[in-house]
Image: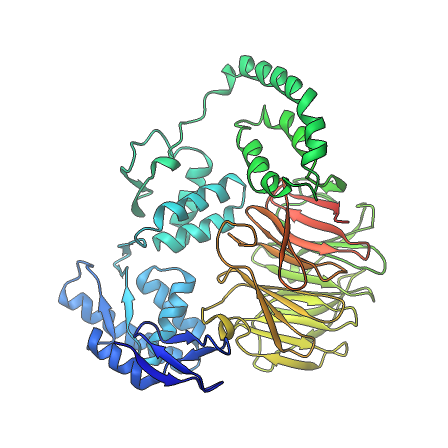
Length: 548
């Protein structure tokens, strides 16, 4: 039986069916918190206690001990140390970051929490969501194959609830093709004794053949490619251009298929030039880097930005605090470090302005740095302290940044470093879903585009901090996202978002335009004034392509 109450924003009548604590008003489109009296009535019907436990195999003493730990977790959260409470909850249950955050927030509000796994004596009983394991594990495998190990580990932990080490071991096993052998369809399979799940037939895969027997196959591939290219390339020139009628099909289906049929490092180099030069895929204007520690080499380059005044390119390693500076032609100029070069120094974001300054987030603090030397010349502060995640600079020298300490905030600083405006819960306040991983881009008019990894969507805010629009959703269709990576905006306010399918492009009003095929997963995106797109990839290279 549904209950009716008035929307507090527009006064429209809303029907509450007893599911969830929030709902979207169909009239004003705002997210509404259901009145406590209605929620309390539902909770009383469903369960008289705050904690609902599944089948965990715990004796009474262990259940009492876990209840006591939960009480401590709630107390920690209500004292204002929400991050520590989330950490403790993950230690107790072994769930992922998002699930732990949702659970702690629910416990703070006195809402029921369904615990699907409980850690006792170092052992975790993990359960996956029914009906979702196959699709999600397919994502893990695809991410691992693409070299996006971090995202694969993150996804694996979300569906199994295991610890970081166990997830890392499992993903590395997938990469080595040792875990996925000739398994019978739907047979339960255990990875590193961490979790048990069913392997769908679509995910079965034979072990790679020994490379020593590939000579005959290699010759066959070369002959086949020569034959195909003689008549397919002219057809492709007519059909697979960026604006051609089959451009979407090429980017979302054909290009990934070609990459899949390169089973070894022997065949892949032969196919790569063909794939790069086929129509529909932008040819790189500039390509530099490679794996290494020397000047111009990268170990795990992710954050990238371009000084649009000088053309200098700044590229930061994810770990170690190393930032390298290149000229507009990709030639190494210099490098500098933050955090004294310590391995645990993490750089999550950086952005250059037109005055030769670089703004950088490390250790969740936001610093202003002289780009030529790496000298710290200032620091920007959120009113409530540390907790920055990502940032972007505006044409006027302003800085927009995301913050996550206790909320998913969006904050804008003036060119003088003063707080211009602050939007609290910029994503969760609109979507109703938690968000812990955000990226941001700013166009020439000062509009901010906030990408939420957990929500798989872009949230648009005006130069005055007013919510405007939402772009995208989770899924595999055009205009939907799966494992998003980075965001950037060109001079026409077109929005570019990278995910496992490539780089999707949207009009300023949010309409899907096209997908730019990518050889590798893009960690970072940046533009120059000519709308050339720069990207860092898991190939440990910097690629520059034209988008006009």
